Structures are given as C-alpha cells and as structure tokens.
Image (cartoon, rainbow, N blue to C red; front, side, top):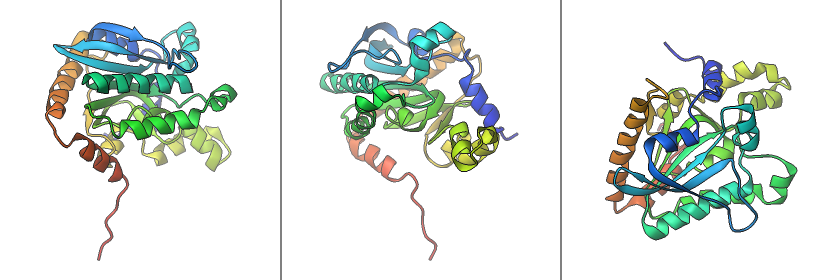
Amino acid sequence: MDQIPYAVVKLARDNMRPTGLDYIGHIFKDFTELHGDRRFGDDPAIVGGVAWLGDTPVTVIAIEKGHTAKERSFRNFGAPNPEGYRKALRLMKQAEKFGRPVVCFIDTSGACCGIGAEERGQGQAIAENLMEMSTLCVPVVSILVGEGGSGGALALAVADRVWMLENAVYSVISPEGCASILWKDAKQAETAAASLKLTAKDALRFGVIERILPEKDMGKQPFYDRIAAALKTELDALSRDPDLIAKRYARFRGLGAVEESK
C-alpha cells in the first residue's frame, strides 16, 4: 500500500524517534565530541566528533533535535546556525587530513532562519559546505533519519551515498511552507506534501538516494546493529574506490537530468 505523504511527515517529526545522539551512542564506540567553529561559537544543534565504527576510526556528525521540550529548546529544534555548519565542515576537513570516513545523520526542518543566523552568514555557510563536501577525498555517507528540509539538510548530504529511513522525508521545503506560498494557507499542507514527492520511496525512484533503511525494531539494538553493519560494508567499499570524487560529482550533476525523446 502506498504511503500517505503527510502521514509520513508526521512520523518523521515524532519526538520519540531516535535522534542523532541516539544513533551515535548505539552504533559507534568511544565517541569524543568536538566543539566550535573557530570563528563564533558552538552550535548545539549539530553534534560532531571522532568515534570508532568497529575497528575503523570515523568522523560522525549529526543534527540533534532532542526529545523533551527542554532538550529541543536547547538544540534549537534541530535548526542549525551558521556556526553549526562551519563546525561540521571543520570536522570534515579534519577527517580528510587524517583519512577518516565521514558519517552524517540528518534530521532538520531546515536551517535556522533568524536574524542572527543571517547576520552571521547562513547562506554562505551552507554554500561552503556544498562546495567543500563535493571535493572531500574521504568517503562520505549521509543518512536522513527524520526530516530532511531544504538547504539545511543538503548542507550535510553532499555524500557518496545518501540513505533514508523508510519514514523519513526529504524536501526542498516543508509542506506547511509550500502551502503558505502556493495557496496562502498552511492548512493545505496535506495537499502540498502529496505534490512534493518527499517520501523515501519517491527519493529512491528519482535517484536522489541509494537506499531505504527499514525501521523494524526502531530504537532497539538490532535496529542500530543493522545500520552499523551496512555502514561498515559501504565505507569499506568506498575507501577502495580510486574515483571517489569524480563519481560523487557525477552523482549530483545527474540529479534532475532528463532525456529528450527523438
């Protein structure tokens, strides 16, 4: 049975879904969190650091929403500021220096759109991530675990492999935002969600992602173990690919391409 897109959006936003720190805690060992962008400050909406995936050292970065109202307020509801994206990029460049693969967990309705974020260069921070991630010399795997909203999500998703959980969403705009623009009525969000093609099945069909991860036993250790095993296999394969950057570039250049019939 086909999924109802807006119902999937609600599942993606459920505050009981595992968040970035849950994935880090259950998949990786000896995680050491690193802070700050060396320019302005630390953004709690993005958590990053060094950890072990089995016997492989990796850099792991996650957009963190939190579960409780207090946690979500502290994490700015998973809406990163420019310093968060700059911290993420700093850690990715560090990973490149030491030859560590990068794993990103994405769950955001979009980047912070406040005045302070704009004053500190939100658009430039996202653009720099897009540009720099496209040329990283180490394997990158990004997983959308909840919401994947607009450039705020894409800023951590210029990867060799992009995966989604089966009830995650990935879209250029939220259904409510789309409905407000097109119909001047956020209550039309359900109609907008159906038009945006934002489900994992849609993303896989259009070639935006490579894999859908099932949510069986979500939150239990077997669920995390399956993701860990998939990551280990994928990163091992990518680390042996001599054409990593060229293939990553071709992957994103090919999105949206159409063939005209003769």
